[in-house]
Image 1: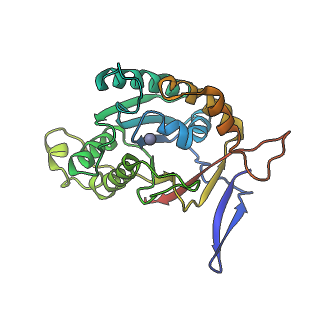
Image 2: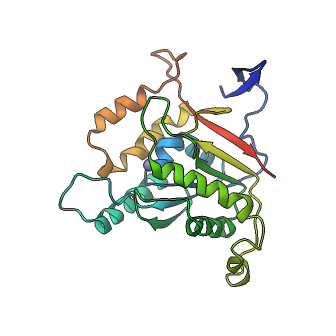
Length: 258
Ligand SMILES: [Zn+2]
């Protein structure tokens, strides 16, 4: 069952979407997922990505960095790690049914929402021309389970939202994209923000939770203990789950723009 969060008399309540889910689009959608690191799409919304791919939507990834710093292996240099992470990301994406991947190869850990980054994302949006953009919430400083959010995640979310509106929409922003690269402006219809403390859409991803886990396993260089990862992911079942019937959800803030 899918749910949505409604605010009634100042209080949030979970309301079952009995009629139509918010992703019950009538035609195949082109969906662009823009996040900071290899493994972010799978961790943040891998169940949803697989659900959308199965439903016939076209999914494109854009990873802003290639995760070239997160290792304890002393013999590895950044450029080697970058290649490993890209290969793992391709395998994970393939498993979830993703059609295409762009890597912008910004340096891991140093991402800032610069005009250069905004322009590069604007270019991708105008090339891919997505109906839906998925990114993460730039305002999340710490997560619900009291972890610090990675600064690259905040930077990525900020740069993506700023690229969607207004940069991708109007030709005079980064005019060289239109004038020299012949990229027409583009209006994104919906933005789905994951990693947010203020979700208003809760999607049931029980059926695709295993695919999410399998895709996460593809990020071998990032997993110290596969059993621990499995345990952690399986423990994320909803509170109303039973041992016989575990249920899993992914949450988003959905912005309808156009
Ligand atoms: Zn990350």
